[in-house]
Length: 408
Ligand code: LMR
Image (cartoon, rainbow, N blue to C red; front, side, top):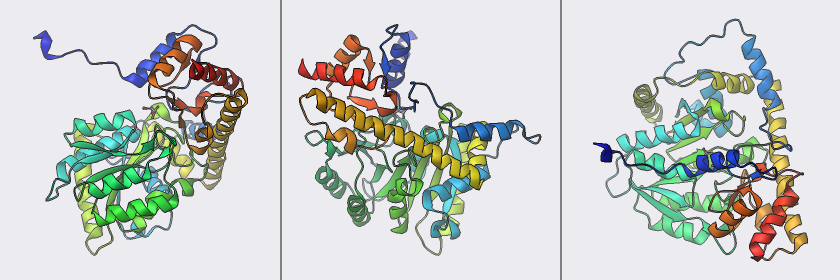
């Protein structure tokens, strides 16, 4: 019967993208989806990705055969080194199981599915705690597999920084063994990350409560321009001996958005059984992966693998990462200084304090809708702007539009 399938709402982010495309105004500015743009508001194919693509297309051995279920081993092995460090003990002790996935979303999903199936605790500790706010898709991904959800405070509306006390309080009060979703760096949507000292405190609370860390990392190298620094929270938890999982996306840091390249990693705690546990986990991940996608897509994975396995290309990739993060940092400075020049009511230091792809401006929903209809500036309803949508040509226009809407 027709009423069995009710109409679902359109995805807010992709709906915003569609509305932007349909807007005929020459002034329109897209600060919606988190995808890098160059100073001409155009998508940027990383020069190193172009080179790798060229190598791939000239490879007479390249074909379109199936990858193994766990994906391209030359990618997954380098991907785990990228996260944990080349000489990580977890890797040499064979405590890491890695599976190539449909980018970060697929990695979160595979992890969620795996935990829904195998994460058993004695108490109520199967609940997944998400930061409030978090990437909109997290909620759907975890609830789709039937895991109960809760949130921990994250953003302080007054300071537009971290609500550290709120976060710590909830983590300390959560049932023992809860699953805690953590953004490894460049928190989406707020752009607010804990400091290294705060990460240590978070790790201590989580250890005392035997919580299970689920890291999501979509911005390694893209946040600070430094691959190691952007992985430091994950490395801290691994060195602290946690059993944990990591969802890793190569969409942003390789600009391989539509290629859906990413990995899921399980890391076992150090113990005499760790390697055995890891082998068993890998076997179960393979079963889940087979029933879900059979095997992951090959093209983007090969591109990332070519770059990660060649010293010169790897160095060039780091250059490209610095280009992207550097331009975003420049845009943070430009937007803040333009707002301060205009004397826009309020404090704007959070724009330069925040890190990564996004800034949480503090604009409310009414202001967001107004700036969209009046100035054709598109951002998500929570006031998040994708910093990469700003450039030297439109930042003044956007600052004036924000100024106007704040004063109204
Ligand atoms: C975003 O948050 O804008 C990106 O991560 C894109 C997405 O898939 O939501």
